[in-house]
Length: 240
Image (cartoon, rainbow, N blue to C red; front, side):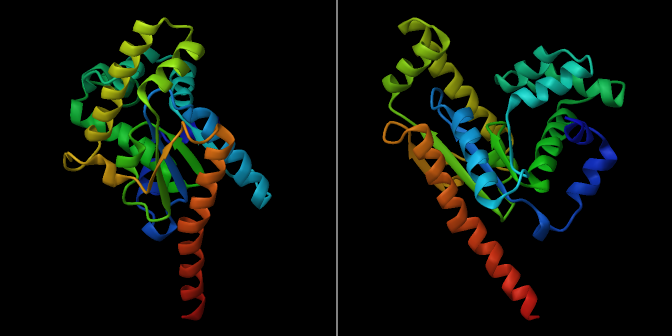
């Protein structure tokens, strides 16, 4: 947990953000439609990567780690919840004010959130669930960007079971949450895009694969894309 507190220190963030691009990552971002079990998939990825390479470097991050930081610092977590639920950035101002003091504009709020998430991604060995990660980390070369999808009523059934919701409540929850997650991706893009699907390296239909199979697929694709290019870059560097 102490490591994540560092990201809220402006000097620490600046040192990470100013580092050479070649040192960024590796990172896996997971975007998802509601009800696709992204947290469970991320946990499986981390376990598989750490076991395969005999390390404990890999970790997965979603909104909970940010909530935990806010709680420990006595900041209203509802302000963060509002932001990640798609409400205007001004609702997050109080959190940033707690660090910097005084009034903070919406642009500075957005920049602070982007810098914190980008710092986590640049330091690498992280699986980032949501948080607009595909937009924020799109310039990191050693990255794999994944989107999890599934048929609407397959996801409705999943949400009904996991959240103990009725049919209509689950339908409403999925429609609203999907829209807000799409808006969040757009929020952190340098330029709005009608075709956000092009941001992803791969899209996986969760109906076709179990959680464990989905994690295996993503690890395999990470090795094919990211590890391959890291290895090739290392060979070129050693030959110079």
